[in-house]
Image 1: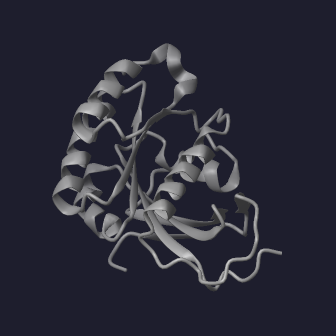
Image 2 (image 1 turned 180 degrees about the vertical axis):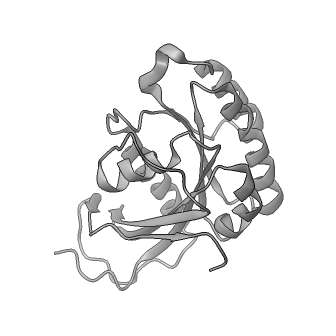
Length: 209
C-alpha cells in the first residue's frame, strides 16, 4: 500500500543516560507498545528499528539503546558516532541521574556537531510522589545549557499516554525538515503520518561493529 521501503531516509537515534533510568523501557514502549517491569540492564548497546512516514517522507529510525553502567561508559562513542539525534534520559525520582546528564551533554558537545538533535526525557512520571527533580529546575537547566529550543518531556514508560510516540514523531519531523538526507525521488501520495509496525528487529552489541 505504501510502496517499497528500498528508498528510505535513514536516521540513527541514540538513547543516553544513567543506569536504571528506563532507557530500554522507553524504546520498547515506542516499538512494541508494551512495558516489562523486569527488564534487564543493557550490556554494551542494542538497537531496534522503526519504519514510519512523516510529511510524505519514508523514514527508518535505527534506535540505539546504550548501557548506563559506568564500566561501559568508555564504549559510548562507538554507539553515538554517526547519530543524527540523541535522547538524554533521566529519572525524576533520582537527582543523581539528573546531575549525570551534564557529563553526557559535555561529551556530546565535544564529539558531535551542532546539527545533532537533542531531546531531554524525564522518565518515571508514574512515580511523581517520589520526585527528586522539580520540573521547573530541569527546564531551567535545559534552557540554560542546551538552549530554549531544546524540548524536555516528562513521561512514564510504564503508563504512557502517547507522549513517547510524539517524541519520536517530533524528532523525526525535525530531521526531515533539516533535509540532512537525500529524500526519495518518487513519493506516493500518503497521509501525513503513517506508522508501520514490522516485526521488531533487534540486535545487541557489546564490542566493535
